[in-house]
Length: 130
Image (cartoon, rainbow, N blue to C red; front, side):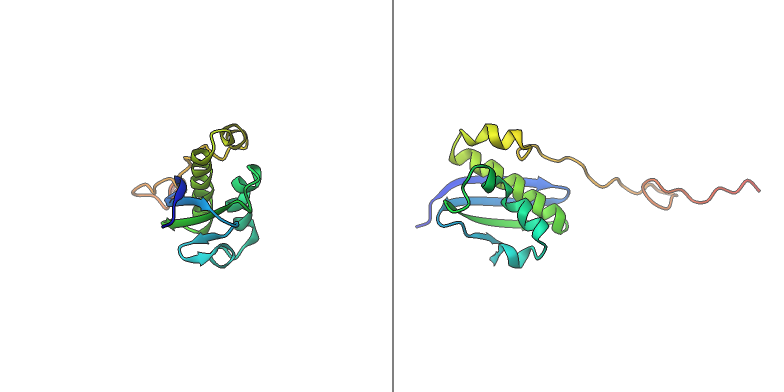
């Protein structure tokens, strides 16, 4: 039986990630694939791993992530947010360091909706005086 030490839900843009932290050797699995396999760019891999680096838990925990919605960048941000929340459940002393680095703050920026009668959210059709 696998025992979860911490569970966290992370959100970013339209992505939602459920993160499960377990005792282990530092293996991170995203949607059944390895972290480097799911996120091919090292920038996104570093974003996901950053909460583990801050609390010095790279080789202490195994992390299982289920993520859906949005694009690659939003999913990486959602994974980071969920992992930070789960690490707070594992040990309360992690809270100050994770909060100080901004990992526990939900990034609420969303794409602005397109307005009717216009070309986009902000873009307008060309003005013609005559």
